[in-house]
Every structure is written in structure tokens, then in C-alpha cells.
Amino acid sequence: MYMGLLSSLFGSNAKTDFKQLLENGAIVVDVRSRDEFAGGHVNNSINIPLPELSAQIAALKKKNKVIITCCQSGARSSMAKSQLGSAGITAYNGGGWRSLQAALR
Image (cartoon, rainbow, N blue to C red; front, side):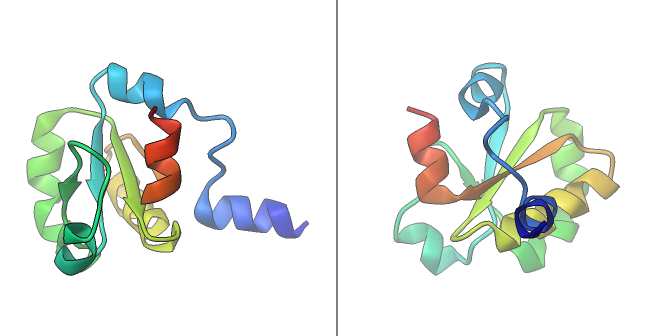
């Protein structure tokens, strides 16, 4: 029961092929703060801190790309995925940036 709840909150990465999504043109959006992003991030990801995401949704929508969100642990990226999905953007929660980076190798 708890895993189902956690998966619904944070997303389950077990079934999502993030590498394939990226190869098909997806964009990785890291929603951590600028300082966190500067300390390390997924290669070629873009940094849009979560509090600024709503102001960037129109620009992201114009790109017409799938978005993979990531952060430190998966909590903020889950919120970002929900915001993007509500705006009609196909988005996946990539979870923590380090585990996403490993999945993309």
C-alpha cells in the first residue's frame, strides 16, 4: 500500500525508459535552485527553479517536446510534472537528478 502511495506521489521510474525519451527529443528540466544546479546536474538539462516554473510554462509548451523533470529527491520534480501536465505538456518525473543521470547512461 505504501509503495503505491509513494509511486503515485513521486512517480515510479521502473517502467519509464528515460534514455529512449531523451533520444526521441525530450528535454530534462531540473527544478532545483540555481545554487543546487550549479553544484551538479544532468548533462544538457535546463534549470528552471520550481517557484519560476509557472512563468515558463508557455515557453516550454511552444517547444512541443516531452519534458522529464528532476530535482534532488523527486518531490519537487513530482510537483513540476503535475504543473506541466495540467498545462497540457507531456511530462515524466525523473526523480533525483543523480539517479536520472545514471538511467541516461
